[in-house]
Amino acid sequence: MTIENVQRIAVIGAGQMGSQIAMQAALYGYEVALQDISAAQLEKGLAGNRAQLDKRVAKGKLPAADRESALGRLHPTASVEEAAGAADFVIEAVVERLDDKREVFRQLDKICPRHTILATNSSYIGNSRLAEVTSRPEKVVNMHFFFPPLVMRLVEVVKGEKTSDETVEITSELARRMGREPVVLRKELPGFLVNRILRAIQGEAYFLLENGVASFADIDKAAELGLNFPMGPFKLADFSGLDIGYYSRMDRYRETGNPADMPPRALKTRVERGDLGRKSRRGFYDYSTDPPRPTED
Image (cartoon, rainbow, N blue to C red):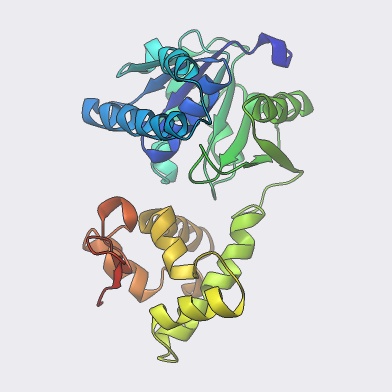
């Protein structure tokens, strides 16, 4: 198989990540099936994509005809079989929970043609833990886009224990043909490149918060004004989704049993009450106000 054989792409999961990944592929000429069991989620994802493209058209960055062509290449469906049954490349973008992802990969392995590459957009879970439930481990790979995929250029491509060089090469070239820049990790490790660096920064930020050294708003201000970060670690956590950070930490804790890997109290409290960051309009900050104001624990 070569990159030229990749004609039809399926994206499983129409959340903010999945819907934008699908739109990015459609913008670059691919026929893309976007699947989600929730009709409301599909509708929301498509509406969000159109809004993003409308902004580009209004700014003169995208011809209106190209917008309509791209939207026409994006095909929503509630059926995994319809989405992936004839796909050459599948990108899974469901919730960041190992059991849920493994179930998706079991299903995809049965549905997809034998040549189909199965990629996960997971930002923490290595593909080997998903490949083991399939009969094609050499065709399983991480293809981790960054949020928002319609803006962020980087894609982390991770070679698993049994991922073939061919799969890595095709995945990397597909990222380029979707207008993105790949980096290749030759081995798996939790958090990959960017999130490992970010985890070190966030770990220190949570340490300072939970030991009463400073408020999270002041920690953010210090990072933004003192380190010239575009947003502080807590604002970035809100932006990415607090549930994603929470579940990745829980997965790491279940693997290591190390109490240091448990989610910090400030994160756990917010996720348990449904404050997931910008997508729920409330996390470390309340986004119902302009500018957003810090929330209480």
